[in-house]
Structures are given as C-alpha cells and as structure tokens.
Length: 341
Image 1 (cartoon, one colour):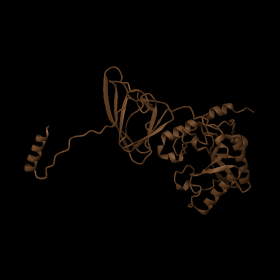
Image 2: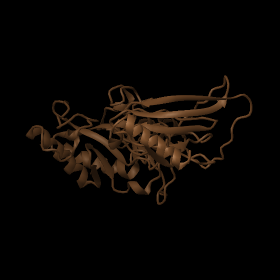
Image 3: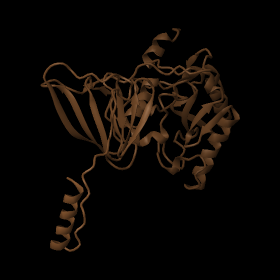
Image 4: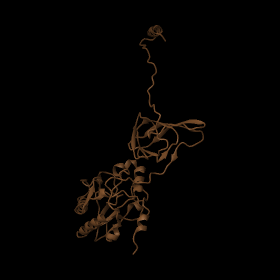
C-alpha cells in the first residue's frame, strides 16, 4: 500500500467515523531462536511420521514433575508462575512468566513449583505418531563428592556407644512430616567422635534427671534426595541434595528429652518436625517450662561440641561435620557390616 492510498483511507475514516485513528499493523515478538536445548544438545527432529502435540502443563504449588526426559524436541513457554528445573548435570534453572526455552531432550530433569501460586506452561512436543513423548526416570543415585570431605568414615550404632539412649526414629514410621516410612528399620548411627560427644552430653543430662531420646541421626543421601524432590514446599527446612546434609555425613542428630523418673517425654515449644516459627531455637513463645527444657538440651549439646541448627531446636551438628563425605549407605548395609559378638 503506497502513501497516497494510506492517506485516502485515513481521510475517509475520519469523515465516516469521528475519532478514527490509523490502526497499528500486527507485530510479532520473537520468543526463541535456537538450534540447541538448554542442556546444549543439538535439536534433531525424529524420523518418521512427525506430529505436533501441544498442551498446557499445570503445576500446583508445592509439587514437582518427577524425574523424566523427553527424547524429542520440546518447546516450553511459561504462561504464569515459575518453575525450578534441576538437571542430571547438577545444574538448576528458574524459568519465570514469559520465559521460552527448548527443554532438554535426553538429559533427565525434574521441575518443581516452589512458589505459592500455580504454574502454567505451554508445551509443544514434536514426536512420532502413536509413540510416547515423556519417559519417567529414576532419581540420581550418586551423592555429591565435595572438596575437603576426606575424613575416614566410622559410623557406629548409637546404642552400642550408649545403651541408655532412647530411640524414637520417626522416619521408620508414618509419624513424620512425609506421612510414610522413609527408613526400612529404626536405627541410629553417627560417626564415632560424634557418638562419643553425644554420650558425654547424655552423661551431663542424666546428672540433672533427664535423658536423650533420638528422633534421627545418620540419614542415607537417597532419602534426602527423595524429600527434596517430593516436598518443594518444605525446602526451607530440607537439605539440598546437591550439597548433602549433615545427617548424610553421620554428624547430625535430632533429639529431645525424657524424664528419668517418669519416663515421659519432656514438652518443648513445638513438636519434632514442626515447620513453623515455633521450631526456632530462640522462639519466645510456649511456656516457661518448655523454653527451659529446650535451653537445657541446647546447653548440654553445645558444651560437648554440637551446634544447634538455626531453624530447628531439635537438630544439632557435630563440629567436624564438613570433614566427612556425603554417604548413601543403607541401614541394611550398615547392619550387615556390623561386627558380630
């Protein structure tokens, strides 16, 4: 259309429709122009009868997609919310509203909505007619190998070191935040120096009429991985599997107190695995007796080379935790390796 014709249309519009203005031409915003996926894979379209499949993926808050891969080109555009995606190469990316990307094809990955609003993603798959385009994968099996963690592993049963300890291993029962057992059996292991320091703390508490009850100690890395993947809404309280937890190193213990005279559990400002402000070691609420019991526990543990975790009054880390490797030994492995008497 030449300039003269455009002017004629504008003049005619102005006469017929007061307030008429020249309309803008349609425009296009480039979303993505790439030959590679986010995992640096070359995009190759499958041979055969190629079909296009499109969908809007809805990820509610606090849920994840599970580990998977696609095997075919997969275009994604975030319509609302955001998603954090972890890849098998130990990298993570956050995609927000308006982001467009070609998802990894062969590299397995998992997406999680860690926010409070639903996430919706427009997905376009380019595959073969009649064949699946999403393949379920198992989570990674190998824990991270971290610098400086070269100290010899010497996991021991806490009951072997101190038979006076009471065990209430919540993760061997449904009585934990996940609602189902995470351990095959109720066992408590720690590195030997940490176990001996724990015994010394128990000695001190016994002199005041209290004893230690153990909720959790060594935790296989695979359990940490499972918690992180399954419960994105609790990640502020969960260990990052890419770093491993101090439980995985055999240098953390979750515990409370019981009364030696009555055998009753000593009330604290919150229950174990409470994901609220009541779990804070310095929480000012609760009764005076509850706060006094919490502080008594902390004083005994810190006297013997443990430090309380900032979010949890019950969680204590042994001073040398960083020197030990992240472990993925099962309780069955540890039980089988225990010396026979």
